[in-house]
Image (cartoon, rainbow, N blue to C red):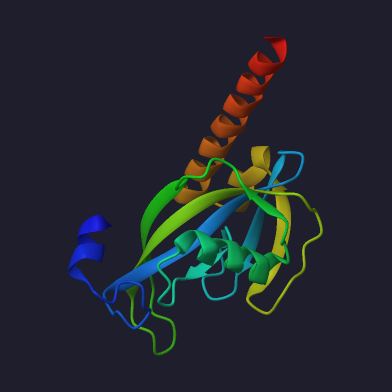
Length: 166
């Protein structure tokens, strides 16, 4: 990803035909039991919310904006303040848009609200229990983020328990 960003001055623009940066978020429910997934209209897959950078170099802000636009969730906390996951994936041709790569930078957010609002970008949207994500998506990157989220949440619980017992 770094090499692509260094050699391609338009890497944040979707007009970059080879590929471009996108930002997304794995969003955990208020009780830490579920993740929000959207059924992507063009790809017909259950995925995390996200979208194109469209020139913005603040991918964290882009991810948060996309979550709000695609799910209606506005009250979000970033879990660890770092990039949660990176993924490069192929996007097939769709109408006049040629096949290309998405260089996706992903963040982990915790929602303080449950209510989801569907919009025209997603065919469907729902909270999926973390233990059931594999039944909704076979995408390795989604399964990887689920494993990482479970590990992060377990670590948070362990350190919180250690803090309260000290």
